[in-house]
Image (cartoon, rainbow, N blue to C red; front, side, top):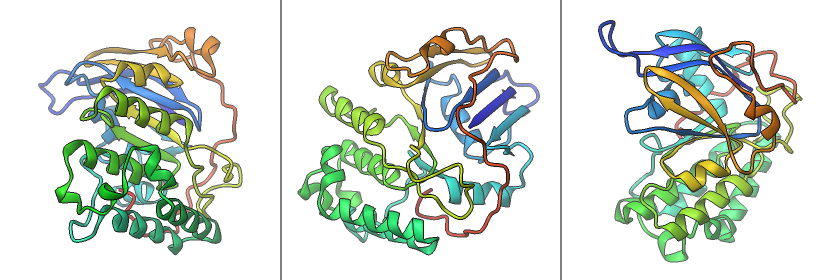
Length: 289
């Protein structure tokens, strides 16, 4: 579960606030769209949730881990163990094909527990059989290309697929459909929201997170159709307080409609037990982030 309390951020003491989120709770396994005008704070919020920057004010909790309190090394391990991010932080080796990049990424999971080994084998099989690739409209020809030879739309879909296959618990997407036409945008949106593979049940995660859980998606987007299909949408307005909008497919629509982010007592009730400890055992980080 992600909980935000009194979050505000600005880049200097003299500048205006670029984020203002009084309160938000997001249940594990749901999807959250971040919408707003350019400069409203969408990418900034993704960076805060990834532990790349610390908010000027407020608290950010993920499964009872206070990212606002964690050291830089602890936040780096948080990213390695729990997080995958599509956008400027999605690395590829240009000396290897897209397919080889995805296979290397999947094989890196085998450095963990038996559960992550199973996840890696399953992911490798899905890449080899083109099942996952077809969900995102990636043809055999595209998969055989070097990343630096792809068009912007092809590269974007490859980045999204890489994160989608990561088996991490929190998947962050920064404009995953910005370079796609309407048909491909819908295809990618449906794959993201309705075909999510479960995250791996690694040794750093409590037994409350099982292989049947679905990953939590946080998507910064200008795509209104994609935002409407998410469970919740948070409309960011820079220095003005953000507010929540329920998606058309929202599984908890009745509760979401009554949420008022200006009231810290308003919340979405938890449906699963939170992680009670943060045992950081894995050190591998490069490929998921």
